[in-house]
Amino acid sequence: MTNLSLPIHTERLILRTFERSDSNALASYHLLPTVQRYVFSRTRDQSDLPGALNILRGHVSLQRPGDTLSLAMVRQQDKELIGHVSLHWSDATAGQGEVRFVINPAYSGQGYAGEAIGALLDLAFDHYRIHRIFARCDGRNHHSIKLLQQIGMRLEAHYREHALFQGEWDEELHFAILDREWQRSHKVRDLPPRHRVA
Amino acid sequence: MPLHPDYPLRGERLLLRPFTRGDVDAVYAYRRREDVARYLFDVALSREECALAIQQRIGQTALEREEDKIILAVELQQTGALVGEVTLILRSLDARQGEIGWIFSPDYHGHGYATEAARILLDLAFGPGDMHRVMARCDVRNDSSWRLMERLQMRREAHFREHAIFKGEWDQEYIYAILRREWLGRSAAMAGQ
Image (tube, each protein chain N blue to C red):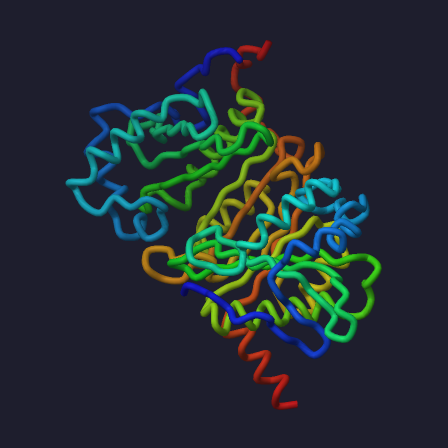
């Protein structure tokens, strides 16, 4: 596998790894109750933020199963950091990966998350040769559900009360898409070709 | 939550009891078969492997920690014949999650024994076991297994495509589940009929 070429430019975004100086920008969306409501590992307050940023800064590539790649979503027009997307390599034998995403609610509804996830799926399938990507979300999280469906992911699981999530019975959805099902978008095809995988 | 059932568990026609050394031949009679092993994670077993499996099962009669299993022999009360085996696994202590599974000898298919045994097991899980949710899983091609899950009024919660490799091929797997209040409500509705 050739080295990962970062940052990734999409139509309106730059996807890059996190930097030490992202602390304030991360705080501006990551601590919001509406964001924390649905994340798997919570960042409760300002004091947890350096730890959260350190974790994100460590997510720079997928070398072995269990690794995560996290990319900050930066708007090209004003260099505003508006959220992040992550690709987690969960299983090498069966080529499984998971995407996660967080967007500042102030910028939601404009297709940024979908744009970033699209680029992440390209990366997962073309660069990392992952076979299947899944995404989990809370059953009440209608924005995420709609987004994942629009991307073309299929609802594969709807668990009721199969775990305790933030102290309550959960309702968890799993969406998934296979490499052969992923439709590369026009936006992505317009990008300069990536290095070929040997 | 620790579950130490009083054995045997009885249904109308069946008796569920811990395995004993004397069960090796009866288990080997069906676990050696390719058609039985087809949708199991195990391959068809040799007699030695059966003997080893039964040796392990003799101690698998209670649930205390996560991933503990209760594995029971299913016996016909009338004849004492061993017709299959059922499993109850403790998957999560804090969320009180369990999983059930079964393997029956094809020689005894078509009598509703698996349904009766699974009901006894769900009564155990939701009664003395105080579980909140019990799930079951199978290969999507295993019609008799998921039909049984539907007879038990479990709900299909997942249909995974190619999320793992099963015996050298991409899998497709169903997960079914039922909640405590659904199972108890169902039992109450049955009693009221």
